[in-house]
Length: 111
Image 1: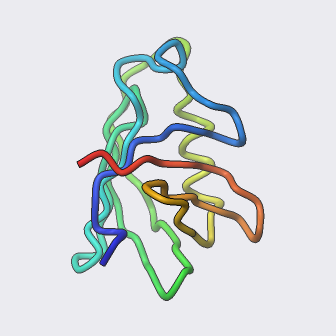
Image 2: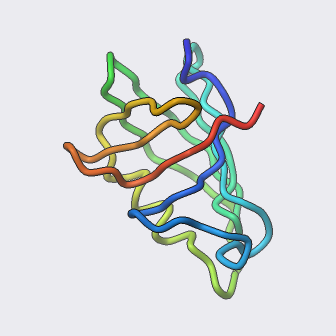
């Protein structure tokens, strides 16, 4: 399945991200479709949890993360986006996470 991959966050709520937005590294997530698992980094902390995918609907379950304090972090906005999304679509090598018809996050396939 195409979703089973590593995805680097490139846009969040319509804003193109750059290295200045990251605390440690670019946020990414790795989706394991068969295991219904997701893991990655928020740019500050690592996270993992469950994911439910049916057709073009996607929902992340309770996510757990490490708890390092980070100045200048997009972590709260990133985690909020993962909680709110309910669907996805593809645009070339990009995975776009959506809430209804609104694009909340755009990820680039990285491997």
